[in-house]
Length: 234
Image 1 (spheres, helix red, strand yellow):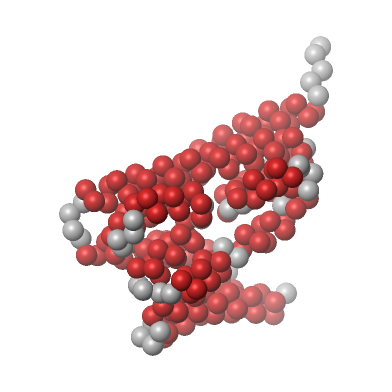
Image 2 (image 1 turned 60 degrees about the vertical axis):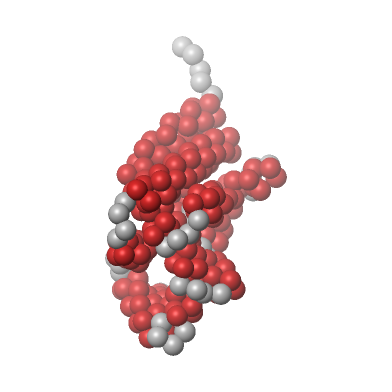
């Protein structure tokens, strides 16, 4: 009988778990990335900036927000503020993952923080075997780099396909359609519905007056409304 250390088992499980989770999110990541790349071409965002942004921003919703606002003539400060606001939820993810990260070396904490997104966070917290530091490191790096490659490739494919399509003015609406596709599945409780309604109402009422601030002000109103209702419910 051969004894296998628990750490080795956990590490092996982490590697296979990352591969499994990558395949699970591929059907949703790939179409989103392709659509975002096509949307960038319709909004006249540079191809190099779009593909490079896919890896550097590494967050589809934030990149979509930035592209949409830039195409509408928003100022740089408003664009940056909106991107930060959209990604503010990642601070909560980071706080929840702090126990796993503090067991890692400095190089890992500096590099791996870039991979904190919805898919990696959900995958990590749903796997008890990742309590082992080595297993967590293997899972996180494989999942993070794997998603980065898939996401960047999908955006690049969308950028290539965009110019090949005939001129379709309504392609400029792809960005807004993607926003709707991201929001609707999350409307599963009352705070989420109220937050979406507040964000939409604020953005629509602000757009005719100050178009460049419609998106960030809508986001602020949505976050505030959802948070307030959540606190009252608790």
